[in-house]
Every structure is written in C-alpha cells, then in structure tokens.
Length: 245
Image 1 (cartoon, rainbow, N blue to C red):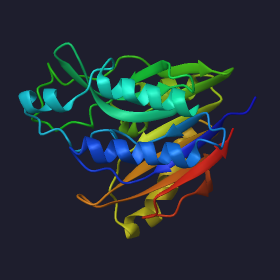
Image 2: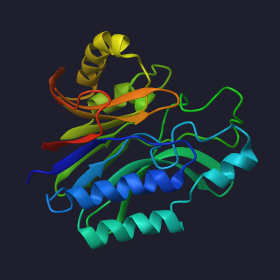
Image 3: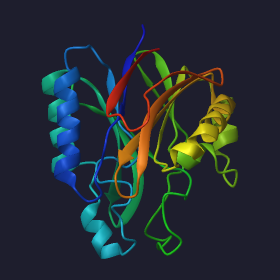
Image 4: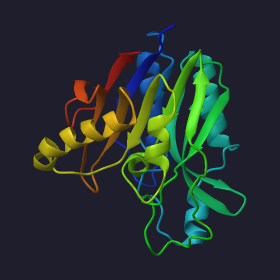
C-alpha cells in the first residue's frame, strides 16, 4: 500500500506559536480531503528554529512536552480531519531540552517521537548537560512501510555514526526535515550536494525546508530519487508537494 505524503514548505515565525499553529491548521483544512497520510513540516517548525536563546529558564518555557496541551490540540486536529501530521518542535522532558520530530497518525495517535542525533541544532554556549541529543536511529513502521527520519545535520555530520548506520538500515524511504538559509545563488550548487548526500542514505529521500523572514530562508521541498531531484517546490512559494511512495 502506498503512502500519500504532503511535504510542507511554509513560513514559520520564531517564538510565535499562534502563527505557526495557524499555519498548520490552514494546511490541514486545505488538504484534509486529499487522503494524505502525513503532512510533513520542517525542523523545529512549531516554535521556530531560532526560538531558543540558549538561556535555560527562557528556553524551558518555550519548549513543549510531548504530553502537553498544544500537542494534544494537534492530535485532535489530526483525528477530527483524518489527516496525519509530522512536524519538528523544541521538546522538553523533565529538565532536559531536545530538538524533536513527532508523527501523529490520522486517528490522532502519537506514534513516534524522534530526537535529533547530532548537535548542530544548538549554539556552543548551550549547556550540554541540559540541551541533549537523542541516542536512537529514527526508524519506525507505519502501514507496512519502514520509515527512516533524520533531522538536518544528522545526515551531514561525520563526527557521529548516524550516516553510516542509516545507510545500512533497510527502509522504504527517508524523511529529512531541515532548516537552512542559503541564498538563492548558493542553492544552485547546494541542491545538487544535498541530492548526492541523500543518495548515500537511501534511494528515496524526501526533504522539507521551511520559509522564514528573519533570518531569510527560501524554503523548498524536494523528492530525491536515486540521487536526483525528481520533484520539488520552487523557492519562496508556500506550497505542499504531494508524493506517493
């Protein structure tokens, strides 16, 4: 059975939870009749990639627990509209903070929560005893499909074993949410580098980047098949790339 995925390239605003939630809601309402298994948003979309200030008291208030009112609201939206959600958020558990990515199915069930494996999401001033990374390869099954997840630098940072381990794992496809703010000129070269890097991980890699105004990110979503760009959303356009896989 094929899965139908929507790769969402839309704007987030840092520390504007209401705006970002509304972006998710509007996308759900627009696509709820298209039998989509997961609408996939970018890395740290819910609060914004730069929402943390690397001051623990501030960041702890910004972060959301996996079991929190906002996550429950997302579950309700998924259940009521029969559309799955996948999105990045800044997570807290106990007294620790993570960059995470949650999958919620069409019935509103929280089916998988991945924590970024590499440390590139945080600044050097962050307290490494409080701002943590995950320790597990992000592989889970849904409707007989083996799905691998990695966040941004997880598939670039060779200080870790994530790239090597991910490349060896049997999977049907890879979801690669990122946040990068290359210029349009830089993207002309970088997109080919990302395609080559994606092919090291798997034959079918779906990459999602968000739009932001400050700093400027041009967004874009891409389907890499065997190391080439098979389909994409053009930069600076809020849109959803529908992929069946």
